[in-house]
Image 1 (cartoon, rainbow, N blue to C red):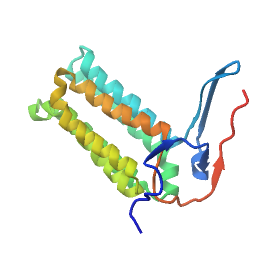
Image 2 (cartoon, rainbow, N blue to C red):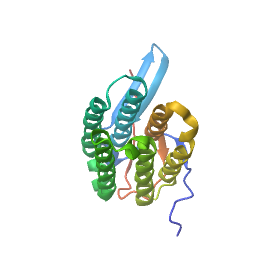
Image 3 (cartoon, rainbow, N blue to C red):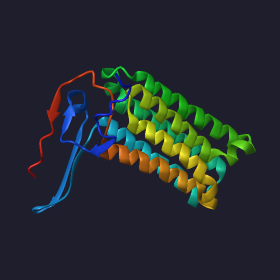
Image 4 (cartoon, one colour):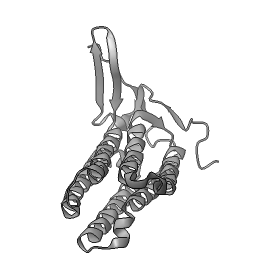
Length: 218
């Protein structure tokens, strides 16, 4: 038996059905003007965690790129955002990873994010030049490791691919000139928001019950 399920597409449009464990905390959005539907979709708690980290990543790296704030002030701001992201991620994903017996993936992301935060703060407050010069590749590398763990744990080619995208981003950074922070933020954010919008492949779920999501009549 193959490690990955190659019968499933690598990326595909979100289906209007979810497994029972994804109903917990699911958010349904349906925006329309008269008979014109502007947007209709739903977001599981896993999707919400992706969106949360995407917004945090964009905020952190856009701040570093564009706002004239001291490094020490940014370190405090980044630390607060990162801790909010960690707590939010654990809260949003805990039920799902518990059902799927994948808690170790969340632990891995927490360790990676705390390691990155610690190195970043030490680099800023202790003036470690090597860390400061490599903040962008360091965060892309940590994200690549996290996606790699996630891909292997879930047997998902999609997450392995996301890890490779982040590694490729490290190779591209030298060509981004003075826009490395923005480029890093965009790579991380676009990847996360994409994962929140599509349906990714993974190993067979522990729970096989699939439930259709009803359409809004509003």
